[in-house]
Amino acid sequence: MRVLNHIITKTRRDLIKSKQNLLIIITLLLFCTLSLGIGLMKYKENKSQIDEYRKEVRQQWENRPAKHPHRMAHYGYLVFRMSHPVSIFDNGLDSYLGNVIFLEAHKQNTANLSEAGSTGVLVRFGSFTSAFILQCIVPLVILFLGFGIIVQERENAILKLLSVQGASGRAILWGKIIGLWQFSLLFLLPIFPLIMIVVLFSDFSIWQDSLLRLVSILVAYTLYYFFICCITITISARSKNSSFALTSLIGCWLMMVIFLPKGIQFIGQNIYPTPSRIAFETELEKDILQIGDSHNPDDPYFKNIKDSLLSHYKVSDVNELPINYSGFVMKEGERISSTIYNKHQNELQQMYHKQLLLVDVSSFINPLIAIKNFSVLASGTDFFTYEEFQKQAEEYRYVLAQKMNDLQIEHISNIKPDKGGPPAIISQDNWKNLPDFNYKYASFTKGITTEWIPIVAILFWSVFCIVIVEISSKNLKLV
Image (cartoon, rainbow, N blue to C red; front, side, top):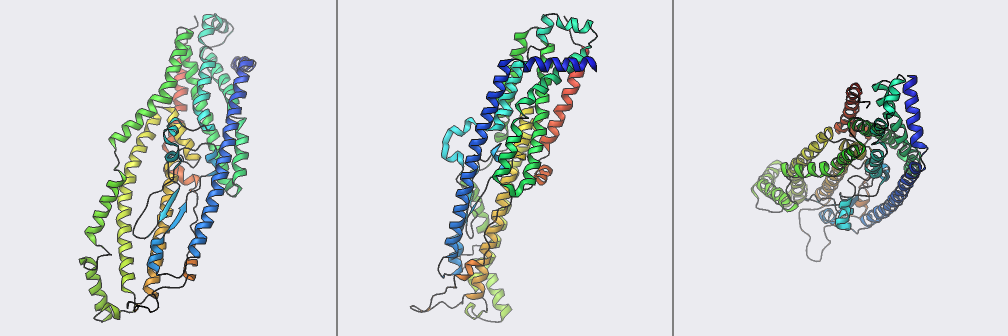
């Protein structure tokens, strides 16, 4: 242990005392700080705009004049998705997913107004975030700083001297790895207190959830850097010369960052293709019409409902019914269309889940995918969080539509008003009774139980590194 501690201390000290290395650390920390500042400004601006738009939408809804309830159902309602505060660190899929959904009766609209839709192809190059720097840039720096730690000491006969002084191959490898790993944490540990301050300052109302997410991110990135250091030192120990070690490590970095992620995405999209929006809506409309069209008075399905109502209330005409017949038909039509839409939406989501599952499983091939997937999960910018928003929006839309149908059933007469007579409308006070849409963030614990594969992959790579280092230490060449 004394020899191991000495090697750890010397490795760490040699890396820290280099002014060039300290300059690299300071530069990357400044870039991370700058990205956090930009992220905070974007978050505050988006939050302010969403709060303003929500207030405006609500005021317009409540101030609508007295109308027929079905007209209000088609007037619709706008709901907005608010990013989680931890998205300041890693915006994940937020740039590609819609933020606004228009809710109306008989139709389920998709979320629109994504950042990718307004910025064009530039978003393909990624976002300038602290997560991107810590995931891709810092590992590249670690590779450049650590590629020669073993191979150069072998070339200079230092390993032989260490062995003569009683250092085993195991102590040498683990000493170099832990020393490089401790140095790599200088890129990580100084920035996280700032991240916590920025995130908690942006929205303190959910500080417990945010703190749990940030601590999990810190632990995950710490293990990720441990893997990078293990691979760097192991390849350095197995390389014949410094140039071969550097070339091999750069090749590994390119595979991790560029080739494997793009290749997995391409494979997933081709194995599990998803229909276009037009094809999806066409199939949906076809299935709805097969069961019944609530806007067609001669539709067989709704004609049977009409006959049942007349028989139940023992009347001969819909005008004699004690409830509004059109409202009842609209309510049943809404139930049918919503059930069929949910069925098609679930099938579409299953295809997306298969694509995501393929990406998750590939994290056992590429550790970058493991840390990336866990990072977006912990930051609340993953697909699971987006699905939660869609579910909440659809539940609210269905309640809104059925509330308008209930108002029509209860307060609108079956007898059409005479020309010039009072219109079939209800008071605007009824609009105020509908509660506003209140989006609730998906909890981190729920996300973990759903998206657990990245966590297992990170632990797998940690164990894998230990095994590889132990095997390599037994075959370490000193000369």
